Image: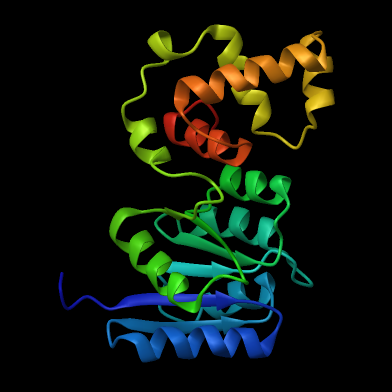
Length: 213
């Protein structure tokens, strides 16, 4: 296992960023190998038919032809063991939520320290996940020790499930026929019980506990 080479693919429509990531990874350690570089998801999928199957794909979200959302959805059906690190400019909460729901194993902003990309790739390979402080600490540990019947009410489980979709808080409140103020009180109670600080962390928790599929 110590001699195993971690194979990485990169999809980003900015050639300079793509090359920079590839150089960073390959210069870091001989244990990392870049097997594909593409400018969009369609190009990546075409390349993967001819290349070695990567262990980890580093994906941008906003790409022409086939964006990151659709790329990860398509690839998960073709390569179920492959893992995904999202590297993007987007700080939007819905972007993170949608990627977590689609099965991303990590989410970083392009403004991060380059060393964090290496940390994330290594962590995803070793542990299956890496999320920065944007999501919150110890979410996976909390998910592992979660007992739904003891920790959350059925109402709270319903709210947690709705938080995982591209719905505003106003839309969620409307679906539940409750006021926005009441919804916020429920979300605060859920966050306090689970000790998870934001919506993205709650979505990640829900995906790991099987509350969303």
